[in-house]
Length: 216
Image (tube, rainbow, N blue to C red; front, side):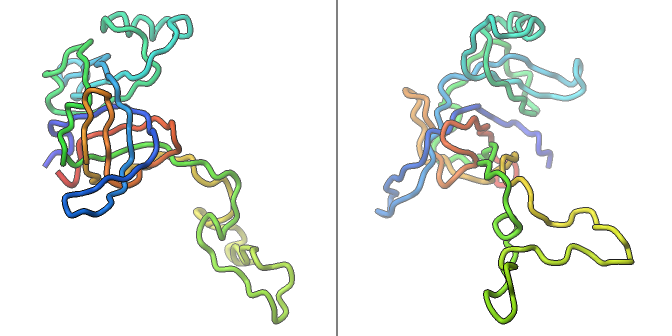
């Protein structure tokens, strides 16, 4: 089965988390995503580009801050400049037209989606926080070693640190996708999706909500 089957997607902004009641009277944690109105800025087909995809635009931007190539790209699609762009592969790309607007109604309540975003940046972190290393004991001869990583490799052989060694470094701020989340509600009037569970990124982060690949 192709993973690029007929898929729907929207760009949005993470508003934060809340909770709602389900049919069993239990609290369900949800993340609110403002999708407002997305616009199709380009359509790619097998004949012209070698693959099928739809490019979406979200959020307004001052036209004077857009480069001339991008300004021409938006003018060709007949839309005002957009701040954020994302491309989604789908086999039914020919069904979309440049300038077409997409709203929250493309996702029905109960639909399975994948949400892609950038995780929170944690800055420089040690091995215990970054990789879950065990700390040294606080006594019995251990002195100022509680949070040190320990040995990172052998001495004479191979006389180097192997690639991929887990060490201290910058943590977070990477692209991550939460799979098979459920749309709890779709508020078309206000352009807000309520998605069950947590999604990557801080409040205000830009995320891509698209039809689930594995669960659907």
